Amino acid sequence: MNWVDSGRWIFSSVLSYRSRSLLTALGMAVGIVSVTLLTAIGEGVQQYVLDSFSQFGARIIAINPGLKETHGAGGLLSSVRPLTLRDAQALKQLTGVEKVVPVVQGSGVVEFNNLQRSGVILGVGPDMSDAWDFKVAQGNFFSGNLEDARSTAVLGYTMKKELFGDSNPLGQHIRVGGQRFRVIGTIEKKGQMLGVDMDDTIYIPAQNGLQMFNRESLMEIDVVFSANVTLKRIETRIKDLMIKRHGREDVTLTTQNDMLESMGKILSILKLSVGGLGAISLLVGAVGILAIMTTTVRERTAEVGLLRALGADKKTILILFLGEAAVLALMGGLLGLVLLFMLTGLLQLFLPGLPITFNLLFLGLALVMSAVIGLIAGVVPAGQAANLNPINALHEE
Image (cartoon, rainbow, N blue to C red; front, side):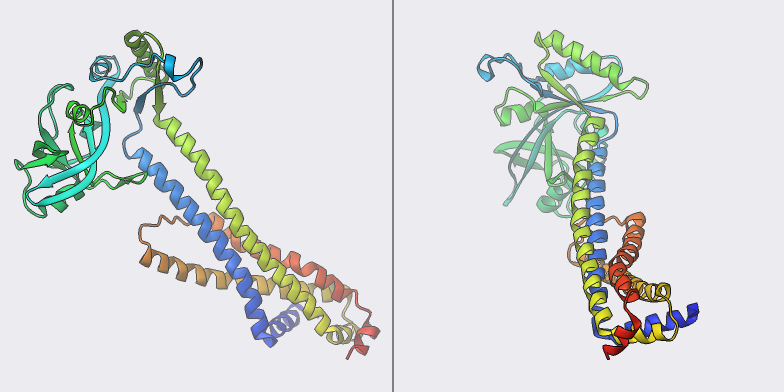
């Protein structure tokens, strides 16, 4: 039997049982959609989180009070000192430090006339807009000393829109947590940072934030260092300064690389996990092909016997049934692509915020896996067909 005749036989066999072939291909299609879409969502989430971390710049070190690893008798005997604005002022004098941003965070109600809006309140320093790459849309950001407590505020994009609409907020007086502030600027749209809406935020001087939330310690101090200074050197300088000021090492330094590495590991595991779930669906599709091909061999025993009687050898029978399994798997692959594009369109329509990033490598691997799995699933039934005794097979009719 030549290749043309073999192809005709394979496709005629598949088309003769349309419903069964379609259901088998659908099983493979669901597996391919699961693998590709779950992997794409995992890839999208990973990219989204890494982008969120990177949007504040690459040369940032976050200083937090307390150590990651503690020893001794516990909190009662702890001598950890709070992070203060004077610590931030001292850090600004270090060689190689460009920007310093003290941060204290809370939440509260922002009022203007008869309008109220609950949101995040960030007490920060004058360097914040430059250090975090937050562009000022209107007016100006804070200026002056880190320890200034001027009653001025800068509005995030959503906060400004909800309270003032299209009108100009500059110079207007609002109440933040019950205290009176004058609006001096607004920030361009920034988006979310790990679930925190940076646009639905109001920014006030750090000193005001400490007083408003009745806190002694800053939540953290962000340091932006110069490009011509190595990370290791600037970390050493910061640690030496904080030990000198606090009498012991009682702060934790977290670099952008540390955050990206930690999140990268977590998200890689997540991506592998969801990919594994999709692979299980693909395996279920392979079991479907195995079951269908085994049934096909039993139903077409007489046909196999006739082929053997006409001179077809075992190799030919094996190729025919393997080819049929491969065609079913490839049909599943093509059907999977169609379903994938349709499902992706629906997700983008109803869940536009869901991060989906397709990787052509994973898509190609899913299609190749469908063909390979189809061949593997067809090996046993094809071997059964090839080993049938032609005389006994003819008697099955």
